Structure formats: structure tokens, C-alpha cells
Amino acid sequence: MADTLGQRLEMLEAAIKRATAQIERLRAERDTLKTRLESYEAERAELKALKQERKDIVNQMDAILRELDKLDL
Picture 1 (cartoon, rainbow, N blue to C red):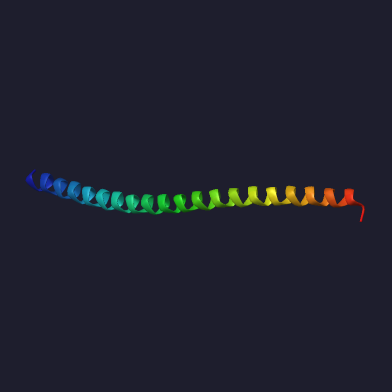
Picture 2 (cartoon, rainbow, N blue to C red):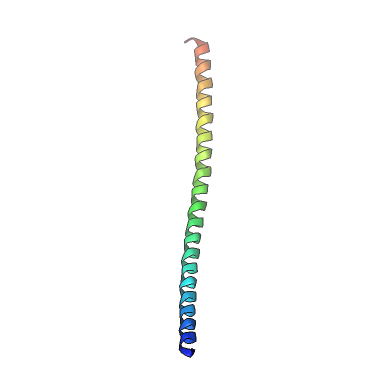
């Protein structure tokens, strides 16, 4: 019985070590993904600002072209 109890204890310790290693890997992966997500969010905000800027420029150019049409050059 002592051997089986000792063996079970060793198996439990090994399982705990594997679980701990897996938790460490998952935490590292989570941190990497969090960093990537923050980077993507920053890029997304920049892209949104650039799209708005492009829209504003197109509207300004359209207004300029309408004014030029009025001049009938």
C-alpha cells in the first residue's frame, strides 16, 4: 500500500508540474496576444483617423470644383 500511495503522490506531483508549466505557457501566450491586440487597436484608430481625413479632403476638393464650375472659366 505504501508503494501505491507513494506512486500516486509522485503522479500527482508530476501532474501538478505539468499543469504549472501549461499555466505559464498560457500566461505568456495571453500577454503576447494582449500586446498584439493593443497594437492592432492603435493601428485601427490611426486608420479611422486617416479615413476621416481623406473624406474631409474629398469634400473640400468637391467644394472647390463646384466653385470652379460656377466661375465658368
